[in-house]
Length: 169
Image 1 (cartoon, rainbow, N blue to C red):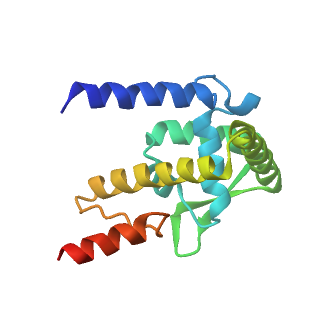
Image 2 (image 1 turned 60 degrees about the vertical axis):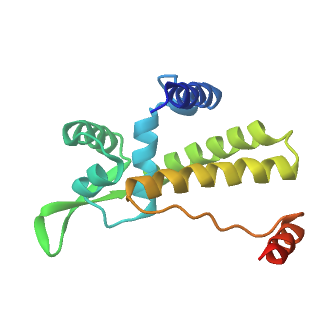
């Protein structure tokens, strides 16, 4: 692979992690790391998840996840209950306090992103989001070993271009 591509991607990664504060030990000036905040996010999405599902979903080391879950349980953010069909597996759920902590982190994160893009025009915001979606689609397709096709709505200039192409055939 061309080292120029690699360096540009790594440069962007450094820029973005610094821009949104991912380098700091505590995420969003909270008492939680980025990994801990991500676990809270995953737990907030469902009430029927076990530790193994979290390991698979976010690629964490099981021992590291276990340490974080114990911390959450000690802080009253998490409850563990046996699944009715398999008592060996524990169902993880956020407590009301856990939901409150997650909601607070989400609100601060939303404000941070709003501040980051507040001076962009709507067109710039659309381009930014379209670019992010394109990156995600390309990397997802590459990981699934499938072909990548981007389908978007037409933009100014697309229709005359299609008309010209049709005339050539």
